[in-house]
Image (cartoon, rainbow, N blue to C red; front, side, top):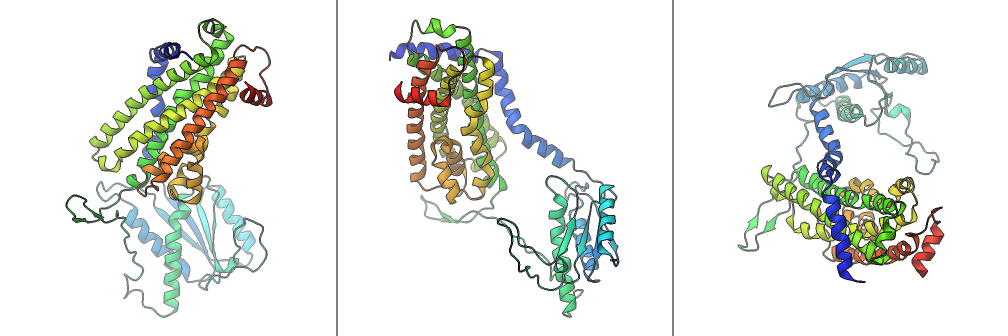
Length: 452
């Protein structure tokens, strides 16, 4: 393989890409698309729905409802206004205690109708034995189902809210506080004389205590920010995924378009199929590195401007680029092989989701891995080569860190896998690039990769 031809093809593809308005436009649009969800969440969080929430309560114990309402109102008053701006930031909760009737089904049906008509947001049904210790119902349960409880010993919550129901989470504390207060009153404890009995104890997250390597002085633990544990690793992984997808996805369409317009037939007169594919991959790598420099520099400047530079572990930047190069090479070679097998741009569009699966699958696992970055599943999945770049970088950016050997093993694995992908893709590309008509089957592509 003549390297100067590879460099010439790579330079041609690189310059042709970075000079387009689409590339410049994408540098701005891609972060907006990937970060738009977070921006939108922040916007809507700052403008919550402050309409009153009406909640009906059926109390079959006769004593829990009052304690529950008092606990809920106390919590609501504490959280109703922002401590600095004094503006209302959460809705006011209004409670309605309803006496139970003889036929509970008719009453539950009537209250369900009120929820559907939006007269109340939800209603609670406090079982008659809710003050007693809860006992599971002893009967065989279907595999994977939750343990059933006796309705008489539980508090049932009825609503038709969709998505994430914040009301249920908000009510959990007052419900349990109300039941506990009723139990204490039943035992003869004077709640009014012990107002701090149910007060919560603040739990503050702190970093680990460290020793200064230069002075030997023991450093005190510092308060940990939620940004440190979630946002920074999440943002780093998202940036890597964004650059890889934006850099590799156009390769599929470009190769298919060159093939359908007979451009490759002209290029193959001056270079071999392997040189042509290698040059195109090299050009895509250059485009990805160019865009990444903008995002990395902008990210470093942003965290410095916000005063949170200490949350960004700069030691992962070399790993970021190592994973970026391996992932872009792997996906671009994969895209070139798939594009060579397509006869029309429409065929390429149908395969776009297949091309991006090595990035999409880790994206679906980001939150799971962040919860247990050194758990068995996170460790195993981060060592599977197609998923290593995003998941291993996510784990390395986490404050918990990873064992020192794992990043090196992961990088070696993804590098070998990328090399194998380039080798197999070049063999498929060599056979398929001049074929026209019906796209080959998967078995045919596997045979080309194996036999050449």
